[in-house]
Image 1 (cartoon, chains in turn cyan, yellow):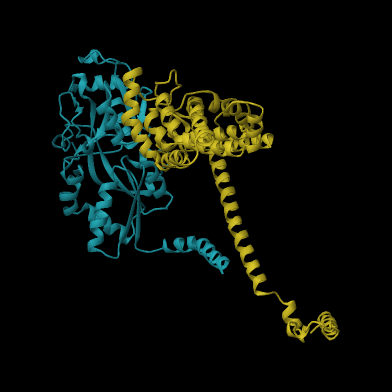
Image 2 (cartoon, rainbow over the protein chains, first blue to last red; image 1 turned 90 degrees about the vertical axis):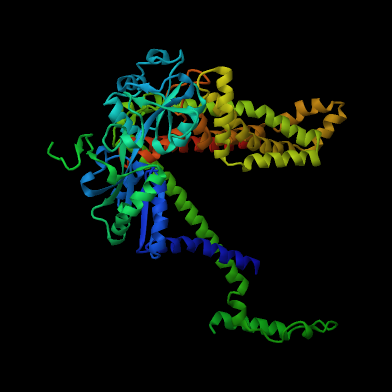
Amino acid sequence: MHKLHLGKLMALILVLPIFLVGCSKDRNKITIVGSSALQPLVEQAGNDYHLTNPDSNIIVQGGGSGTGLSQVQAGAVQVGTSDVFADTQKGINAAKLHDFQVAVVGIAPIVNKGIGISNLSSKQLMEIFTGKITNWRQVGGKNLQIIVINRSRGSGTRTTFEDLILKGKDAVNSQEQDSNGTVKKIVSSTPGTISYISFPYANDPNIQKISIDHTRPTNQNIPTNKWQLWSYEHLYTKGKPDKETAAFITYILSKKVQRDLVPKIGYLSINEMKVTRDSQNRITKIGNAHE
Amino acid sequence: MNKHEQDLQEVVDQAIAEQKVPHVKFKKIVPESVDIARLTSPSKETRQEHWGKGLTSLAIAVIGILIVAIIGFVGVRGLATFVDDKVNIFNFLLTSNWNPSAGKDHVGAAAMIVTSFAVTLLAALVATPFAIAIALFMTEYKSGRQAQFLQSVMELLVGIPSVVYGFLGLTVIVTVTRSIFGGTGFGILAATLILFVMVLPTITSLTVDAFKAVPQDLRKSSAALGATRWQTIFHVVLRAARPRILTAIIFGMARAFGEALAVQMVIGNAVLMPYNLVSPSATLTSQLTSQMGNTVMGTLPNNALWSLALLLLIMSLAFNFLVRLIGKRGS
């Protein structure tokens, strides 16, 4: 008798995956994969959306911008999220993807409190990250070695930072961390460190945000591009989104989400932007496209 | 009823008719006739037997397919770097210029290979004496409650998730190594200390088994020759248990080699050839986990990561092979 139970159990285990695969063909399911920076926003929006649309079934996963773009290109998911423009990524055919920009996030250079500096010129910043300046004394700080903490190669934040600050030069080979949280932890506790971080994470008393050319890293300075270190948060679909996906994207772009949820997570609403930026970093004023 | 069964029926009927044991009332326990059809068809137990065997084989087949698929997939992806992207395999293994997004001349994994082996060997080197000491204490000097207490401490250490070790490392060990040795504190030393705690239970419990497997007779003989307990341990028990202890160390090393998350948090993740124990560097696993999400499937940076994965797979097969080899020589 005991043996028979075991047999049934094993049969169940073997058959179970088939059922699980079967379930995933659910028509209303929207799977959203990619940028971990965008994950909290999409997750919360998905939960709120479910309250008014009980039939909806939105599954949000991280994995990184690269994963998001390649999964959506392969047709494995309905939406791929990314911090970077798809056409800047090798191996991605951006012409086949549809881009929805849903929010803007600022990036701030941060340093450990103890170096005695709160402003750098963009040239100094570039020279620090390319390894030309190696001591804080050279930029008016304490006599302390500069320790550069970079983000992982290919991360959206790093790509944005390097495009806008390093302008094509190679960064010095240094420590790399793959999350905003770890970067914050290291910079707050290690003397002489410098890194950069998304605005929503830059709220630790032991880290010092750095102004660039005396412009302070605040959300107020982003819409006019006065603070230039910012990036779009993109939702990509393969071709035109299907009906359910389109409805959800419309919901994220709705006034309600843009006014309440987007600032709550620490992002800037896409509606506030007074300029647009394309994948080649060309800035255009909204409404004055001919200037 | 076919010919064979008819013959059988006749034989059985004859046997029943010919029962000639006078003192035993045989008829009470033996049937007067036998249903041949039922006798020759499979019983319920036989059917259960077949059913169970079928299920077991099916499960094994599924696992087998899975293993082949994993090795095949990692192999195909990992070799694509060398086949499709034309990266020189010797450059991959022997140079340390790692920036795959810059092109095929920048795929050198040597720094990561060296770091991975360095942390693995150092962790095993530091952990082994402690593991042997604890195991000796538990088997040769104390048994009962104290040994049981140590046993549960070891089990506790195994149960702690690696992210917790990583976080402890990030907050405590990195800070301590920074204040003692300077630099940022991130590097091989911090990773070694974390891995020391993580592989200690593995090596210890396997070493305990090794000591328990040493026959009691050897200890008694040694004592009969007038050896002290320490002499017995040093010359007899340790020697007899040596192959199994080596196996324990290799199991610990395999665990250290494959550990990703905790190491990633304290090693610094700079793909640089380590020049001392507190210079930031990267292991194969830390690079894999921190980069996978940022690369696009099918491109060189992604394929290069699969090559790292293939290297890890080959290494773990090598560790397994080593364990078998030592086991064979020991027995």
